[in-house]
Amino acid sequence: MKVQFILNQLDKTVSVYLEERFFRCLPKGSIRQSFEKEMQQEELEAYLDGLEKKLAEAYLARILAQKGYLSWQLMQKLQKRGFSEKTSRAVVEKGLRLGWLDDQQFLQNTIFKEKGKGYGRRAVFFKLRQLNFKEGEIQKALELFYPREEEKQNLALFKQKKGAKNPAFWLRRGFSCVFDR
Image (cartoon, rainbow, N blue to C red):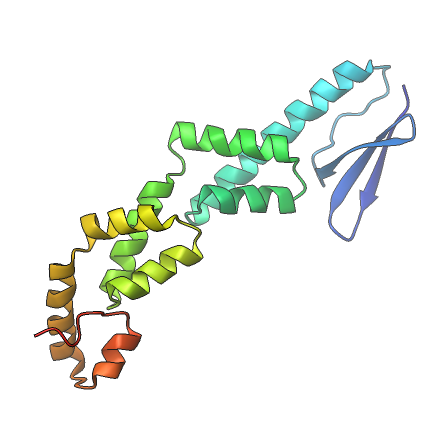
């Protein structure tokens, strides 16, 4: 079986061809073994699948060490990097299973972060909508981690700190209880 590797300098990938037919695209630097011996196609496919999975896991660990991501964001990053959809899904599921990533914890942390920055419930809601969380899921989390009473307390506290008396300023910050007395 003839195996050919072609390096693409533009997107830094290696295209693998079997018998002059395109087989798979892998990230640069992943092919270190020489294929001088004759290999069966199934053996080569198994080797390349294992190699791709190992590389995807290493990449996942590296980017998660830098910043927290949602599972759908990681899927996009892995596929953009050149990994197959099947491998990307398997690696993200492994990360979820091992506790490397947790979408619910990310949701909770985002609520606390935005609340600490001085944003109201409505602004937090729209921030979470941008991150593709479901509406019902957001409402439940907001009731749990940012109740309306706490929003009113934060509004009073931030009004004292900032000294802004203009209700439009607070409406832009996502507070819906500005006019409540």
